[in-house]
Image 1 (cartoon, rainbow over the protein chains, first blue to last red):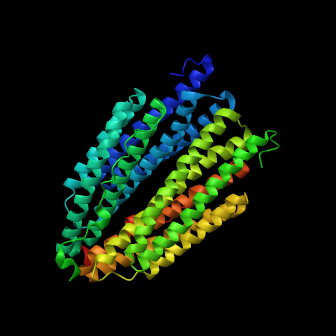
Image 2: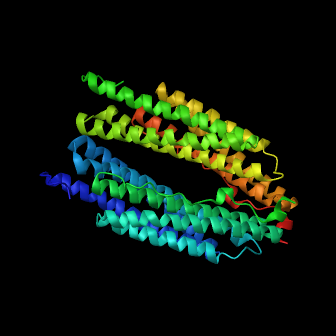
Image 3: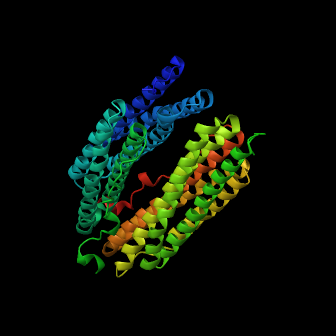
Length: 239
Length: 239
């Protein structure tokens, strides 16, 4: 893995770095899953656990950063080793953000639990599970250094963006027809946005995996299919 | 600046890195300002310019990344030089995200321009100008390597979060009372969220500046005052 590196100590440190990254990915995948469960409830207690769980992800990111700085300073890595260390730094930062967004989703669940009623969340949860599955494959692409799998994960983000845009219209229409649930609908819209952003970070990580394996990013620029910013509710809306 | 480094070439490359970062900051500050102007209109043409302008920020981030990798590989920097290079990598990534969020705000402006009416944006623009001013001071903290200024910028993010939470309640109430403007209100809420997130990234950059100058992060953990996730509209909402 270290390009025929001769220093056993270096390989050991690189392995520790990979382990820390994989542990972060494991926690993020878990946090996203629990955040979705807390939203589906809505379950404020479970959401509380998710919020508590984020600290460990932040701690691991700081640990990864310390490891990378030490590796860069003491080992003067070259070529693939250097790419891997730089990629680890960026992957950790993306994983930390994904953890934050899982927390954002959990916060919305806490609020939804206080409301007498909320819009149906089925399609939102479905979109969330798509992203959760992408995280699982992203983790596999990292541990197996599989650039093709990483690229396929990246390409799936388009489906997430499309699902989010459809969801945005759905909730907007729902709020138009059920003004009493504007609070709930708005919080669900933000939860959906957080999930869509987690998908974007999965995409960033996937591109970093391609970079560390191949030394270059996937050739074709990825398509951005989140059109929700341009979505408005049906005609009567402007009335 | 390079800790008594003897290699003139290294200092030249480090200077080029700083210049690229500062140029990114300059563009981001401009993009955020224009995005707010496009929202205040709303001005779809101006918003379109903002969306076009993001490409240059992305290009600069890629350039910064290439520079840092080259510096790490060829110069084996130590101590403060190494910190500065690692910080540059992270600052560039935060600036790139800020540029994306300016684009998100501009997209909302495009949509608002298509609506016959939209909620008043005055308080949203006010919050945006707070963030814009923070970006200006953040840039000065970076070029002058002023850790105290960086810390004061970081601390101002609490005001932004508080303003965002107030704004969230305001818009929620507005949509309750004016269901015909739920689309406009929702897009403004997302624009507000993007601005609040830009403030978070300014905070990250400020912490990276403290790190590169002092070699450690500001001691006291920063307070997170965005409580909007827990905001609901007045009682009648649940009705």
